[in-house]
Length: 142
Image (tube, rainbow, N blue to C red; front, side):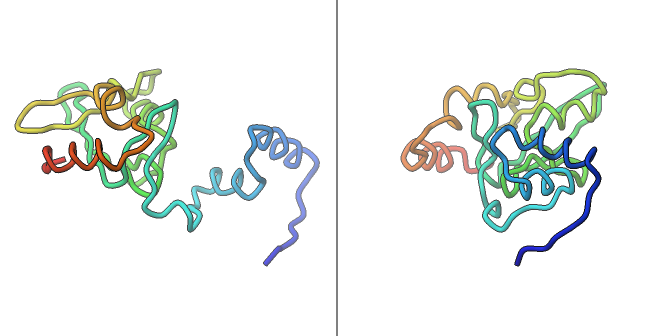
């Protein structure tokens, strides 16, 4: 159902400019309001040419503190908030610019590897059926 809302010209201009990336106005408002669409549920996170599977748990250590996050419904979830990728989530911790693909990683058998490693070798596969299933089976603790 379509609803009509009244907004100022200033707000309209901001929405219009944000929509120039190809997003619909509904998509723009969902991002601002942090409302997920039904078609995002169970989706992998895709950003900057990389893809992280839904349900992946990641960790980071910064200033001797451990941080945990999870990929859920196409978003990078950390501390109760949804981010569009690993870098914005990392920046919320460091309060400075940081490469989230290097900041966050996956622990397996006591060894930690940054997401950038998996981005190059596993997550970025266009056809995730064989390579991702094999990786997931061989690394069941992820």
